[in-house]
Length: 136
Length: 140
Image (cartoon, rainbow over all chains, first blue to last red; front, top):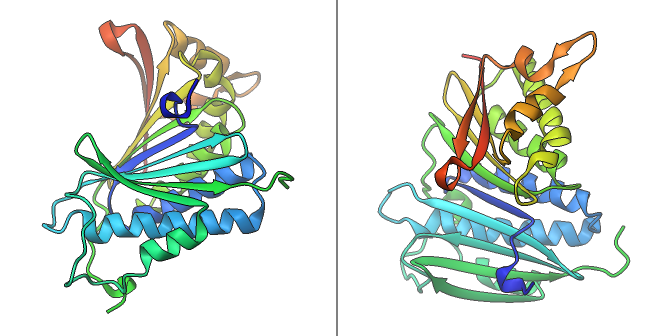
């Protein structure tokens, strides 16, 4: 089975609300504990995914409509792949953005690799985190 | 203005609906319990019913994987101010009934039946080939 066709180990879909980012963080925490991911690595994963989810909540639905936030996590060999998706118009520079613009650079510094893309009318941020070969 | 101060789409939690799909195995119990705790806390669920809900989650995560039709559990949790509806799918044919039967504890009775306010089995999947166990807990 290729990674592209693999069903995620965990898939979470919920309304894109600030309060639901905590749900995602807790789910990832439980995921990390179940697979004995090292605490420092898990902390970086949670921070990067929190930034990606915050971008969805703040930027994906600027017209005020409530949209979805989807998070998928797949453990593949010694990597964890986390994909954050939304149904917004896509990632574009904003001169009127409310944030400091640190989200994507922070994600890039925490993840081993980051891919931004758009497919099936959805925007996705795909983050790959290398896991220590000697997991806790 | 920082992102923390930015206006965000975060209306009071009149209702919330979370879909969770989990591979059966070590993930099921910890993730289901943590997600359930978070959304019930956000729904102002009282502690005794939160405790009941976690007992439900434990029973489901122990017994439901056997009846998962494709190695994954599909769980939908929908809250409002009065309670939560938990849908457990996609279970194989007669899987919901067998899951229910497995929740019988000697001397206690059926954990799922005793804790839930409502409980039913519904067909799901293409052509109704699968089943969902639908449990409702009220707290409002």
